[in-house]
Length: 385
Image (cartoon, rainbow, N blue to C red; front, side):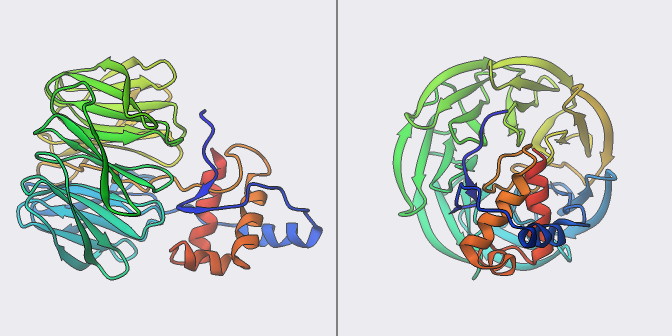
């Protein structure tokens, strides 16, 4: 497992171990004891039936269907309280309240919104507009556009670095990648990843590498995010479209729509270690525990579930027509001060939050969690590693 950077979303936390008193341990036990399972929902955009299927990843069943219009891109907030849907045919983004699974706002954006990504602090959403060659930035508190950033030709994929400082955008029409400084919302670098028609993009949990699927090169480029230079080209199946990296950083999964396969890549060696048959795989996302991969199968109107231990298909879930699910359609992994897998991780993380904000309640407000219980669940899931 790659060591994760010490962040709680975009807010830097204290990476120390404070003195642990019995009173504090009692406080931690009270906070964490009996925490309910974190919400585990996947939001699948069905472009052919004009709706979003909400899949419970514990039971692999559809628990809600939400009407939208010609949905394509999707991104779930790190706090799991919002899902953002790009409506490609009508140039809007639908904002879904995930507690009620209803649309609570509709935001006009550019021409043909494709890719969507939420910043780690949940405060901004970046939307690529395929035919207006720009990126819109949405303030999630007001659901208004606060910036429009010109990028390359036909922008599609977008990913935010774990520290929230950069947004990476693929431009298949110009075979380039644009890097946006999220503080100034200006492009600070434009480069070629070495492939033809770069579409999907994902960034490793440690922020050091970007994996980019090149549609007409039939490969994935691995880019050093510090220098913007290619460090590997990994052959995959034909026409890779969706890319996702497991929260533990060990594997990347790539959907190859023209060879009807998903490639499993070992990120330590940058080699394909398994090829899994999946018909027309499009969007790809991974559960918080890194144990299951969900793949939208565009022409079978289903979602395929892959076990990451065996790289075998374990379930097939019927959804709407032509599921795309382009983006992080399952809640991304949060980040806290402790080390995942370490027995003191929860204690250290809670201590850092209390030290920074005074109480967990105050931390939940600042970090945009809907309540303390949801914050506690996020800490528990993160620390499980």
